[in-house]
Length: 248
Image 1 (cartoon, helix red, strand yellow):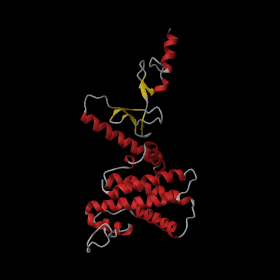
Image 2 (cartoon, one colour; image 1 turned 180 degrees about the vertical axis):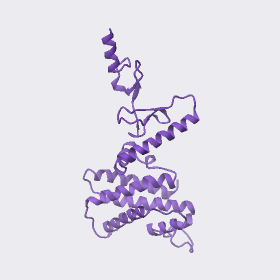
Image 3 (cartoon, helix red, strand yellow; image 1 turned 90 degrees about the vertical axis):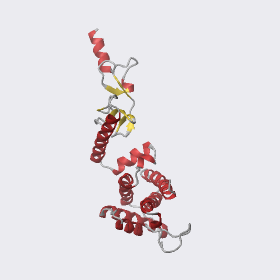
Image 4 (cartoon, helix red, strand yellow; image 1 turned 45 degrees about the vertical axis):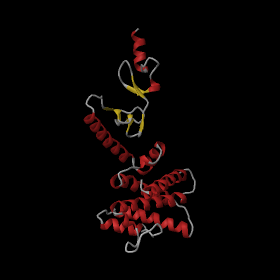
């Protein structure tokens, strides 16, 4: 792994931890500093993948470990010249974060309600940028619980559901092609109520809306999938158990 990318991941993890703690009243300024750093490094990593020399400010001089590298503005300019142009909103969010970072480092930090939203918007940018341009995603580098929390903070309900439904289609198509024998189908998730739980997926009984594996089993009588604790020791759901009792 390239050191730039590795350092970006480290800053990402620290920044997300501070960001989530800030939701509980902890200092947000450390999230701003860390997330700004990881954004700069991820952008620089993309530039590096085009050509390692492009990350240096002056490529006409001999390059060594002390050579100065480009900042965010120069990185975005070079990426744009190479055909990778961010949207106006993405650029605006990044520069807003940079402005706050500069204020923290050189002046002071006066927190207001917009700062948390600003960090969330930049995390949203990374959520889309990593899979599109760096062949990776946020979920690879932070814990499942943290990922679900960040994901729910940066995406709206409608976006979460639409993304989950897209992932279900990709998953079922991918596995069906690879293994025609396996029983691949989607069911209603007992936890969230969406038809986004794929049985026998590559991640187990995984709900792509809840974004976690669910502990579910089939009722041995009616075949309905339920959370494991909803079945008795014989694997029968309460409804079927009552029906059996009534018939007897």
